[in-house]
Image 1: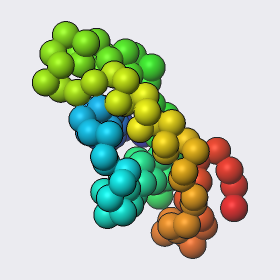
Image 2: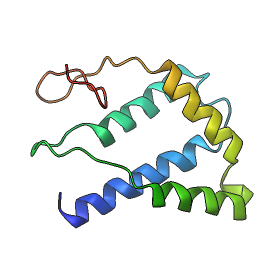
Image 3: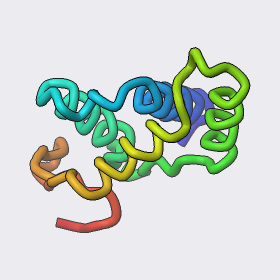
Length: 108
């Protein structure tokens, strides 16, 4: 994966984390929930060269540090709750360009 594309994907990953840190009501709205799931699927789905994105733990640490220093960016506890909701509530149903169900870590 070229460095520009990786940089953009990492920025998107951080943007998603910041969004997840903002509101506990995010997953109560169906459209918001679907939007987050699609953004994650687009992020983690394999590219045309069959390269899949892998997040950097340094990016997660950076987001957590920024939130801790500036609470207007969100709340670490809300981020954790929303990540748990994704982990427990996500059901793969969208397909990639090759017709395979998008599900990180599982081959369909």
